[in-house]
Length: 139
Ligand code: AMP
Image (tube, rainbow, N blue to C red; front, side):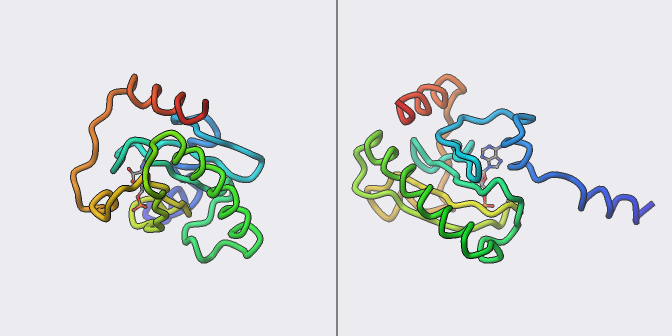
């Protein structure tokens, strides 16, 4: 029985792969063949976005060099959209990965260090607010 549970765990697609597959809804910001960007559901700031490779790898630095390079360039394009949307000083880039075992980059509109304190209480946005933010960013 324990062996079966173990197998299931390893065969289970990550929550982020399920988002890419459309099995779990998300507020999409950008997509190409290899990467997907969507709003973080517990945002530190309006426009807080996650960028993921479609390839399911847990640890960011286990990604192959080419995927990692492409992911940074894809993130750059998303960051430019976020900055235009929020008028923030800069877009912070953070990699944690303690919660979801699928490599991802947090892009967070930032005006001060406090805006990227992950221990802070997150914004509580309605589905309508998330949808409006995504629409404004995508343009
Ligand atoms: P971490 O793995 O520590 O970088 O944190 C994972 C991030 O993914 C957190 O900021 C969560 O709010 C976010 N997250 C988890 N599930 C979802 C989801 N279904 N849609 C959007 N963001 C999510």
